[in-house]
Image (cartoon, rainbow, N blue to C red):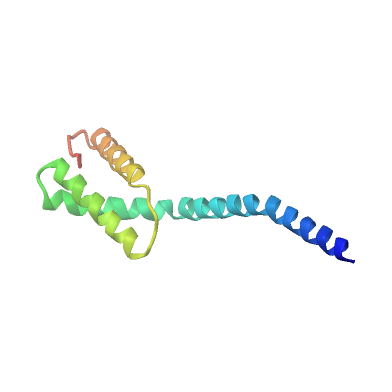
Length: 109
């Protein structure tokens, strides 16, 4: 009877060992999906801060610094993990697009 229990325990542990990495990958996937789903809202937030920064600061670097700080503070308030490098790239891309569309040199950099 004892050997049956040992085999059962070994079998359960083997199953858990195989399942744990799958669960970890699932959690990572769910987190990424949630972040991707919220990306349009993040873009809206960034653009609204960029609009406000345009009227508050003369230098593009000051504008970008303020926008980055505001986005980080907003994300921290709701405990939302953001990749600030991606936010920086987004700001740069939006500025580049704005230059093309408006034919001006409005930048947040």
